[in-house]
Image (cartoon, rainbow, N blue to C red; front, side):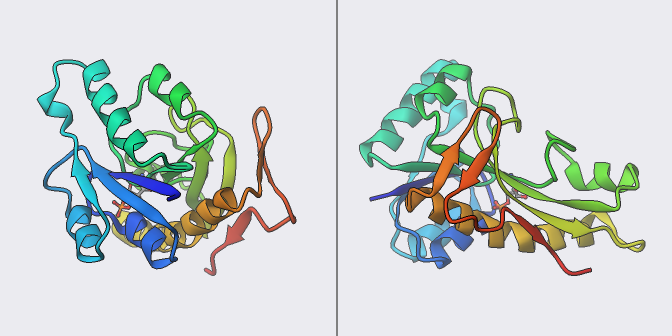
Amino acid sequence: MALVILISGRGSNMQALLEAGLPVSAVISNRADAAGLRIAAARGVPTAVIEHRAFASREAFEAALGREIDRHAPKLVALAGFMRVLSPAFVERYRGRMLNIHPSLLPAFPGLDTHARALAARAQQHGCTVHFVTAEVDGGPIVIQAAVPVRADDTEATLAARVLEQEHVIYPRAARWFLDGKLVIRERSVNVEGGDAQLVIAPR
Ligand code: GRF
């Protein structure tokens, strides 16, 4: 099978990948209380929990996580709200076959609290990005982005909700491109064979 998804919580991006009909062989969480686990299980998708807290070191956690992932021999690993920073060695192990979704228009606002930071910066545009994972956090080659206009009356919650809607559009698209062998990774950028649009502009 083709795709293993790593989550830590709600799992709405995971759900979007499942609903898009992508071949998901397993969902793995680093938290037993991740709501997404129940959503996956209800759809008959195998789930596993590898709790980071149960391990003495990041290396030991990542070794167990890697073993669980590799059991499924996935073509692609999709981070979907997976809230652990991964070591360079782990990232290297899945180089060129691990994607992440980030709630900002990278390279703007890597890291946490992106919606509040976009509002504080008076950004006119915000959005989300699917990128390949590299050792630089939120810094890998960009596959697709969706731009979401910021409204004058936006709050963190309203902006987050409109960005999330677009996350659910672009992540399945990016995963499908990958699985169809359409992505060509260059040093810092990614091309899609066939020239499908790598930028989505959400309506105001
Ligand atoms: C999303 O905003 C995603 O971009 C970020 O974490 C959040 C996860 O949400 N990496 P969900 O668990 O997919 O609902």
